[in-house]
Length: 379
Image (cartoon, rainbow, N blue to C red; front, side, top):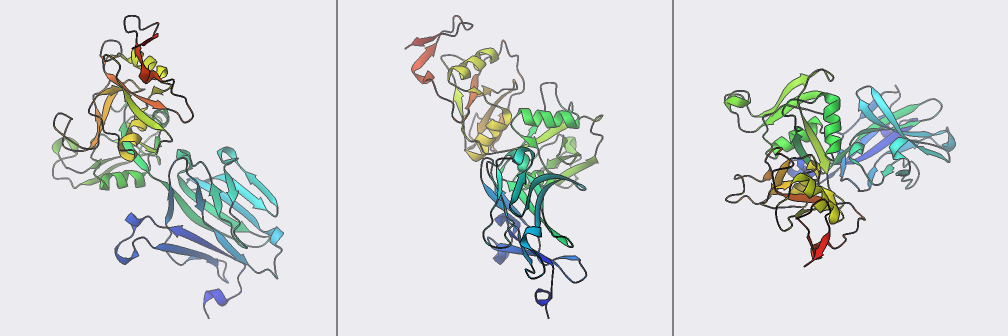
């Protein structure tokens, strides 16, 4: 007699949808079901491999979890459902708890989470307006007075990795500073899984950077002497876990899709950085962040062979279709570094937040003789 015919306390079924890239052969695109059950010994048995659910920033996602209990032995109101997020191997953050008719969400999940409750035994969690910080692993735990079972679901985000260092130069960021730098550029520190996926897609970067787990790594697609010796194999090179407060490296950041658009603005002539800030403001926007430009390049296919200011004072431009005089033979975001803000002149990449109104700056010219006044002139 199989385990499903034996008396059990609680059975959790987790339905996980695999990304097509993680499957091979005839399994491509299929759904996988993970059955987590408690046998007579109380041990948790996972019968098939776990997977992940995928969404994007701003989306709505269901973290699937189902359970079964012996209704003759347990009162439904005794069942407690608890969702937590794994923040470290042995650390969890409360997300959502339900018991009987009571419901409670925690922290940044308040107002964005609810149970799906699609029939008896459905403990699936709905997360709305998904953020970058929602990325990671979640535990669904079901308990009654005597027994408990749990299963894991991984929430992945569609997006793009971007290497980053500030104006100070390479290898200037401690781990906390790397976290802040990514956040300031509309990102989070990338995970190893995200960096590895980017390497498989062609990311080749010779500067070591912090990752979310506190390790320092870098992806190499073309071995060379200045990047760990020519005879070294390709792959993601790993410096291991480093001292977060004392050691300094670059950062590998991750961002997801934009809820609005990045656009290039070049008035009558190229502008200094202070003028660029005012030009974007005059269009109801702000100077775009590095992560926003990367997201526009990767996910919205922004292609512009003109260098422009970004919010951190760097100058970059996105190329989807490589061509002559556009900086190389591969797609990517070209980086001209951090020029002098007052004296070097470029265009500017702006980002208009969702709901912001365009004051119609396209119908106006700008009074360049007195940039401090910045008065619009009819043309």
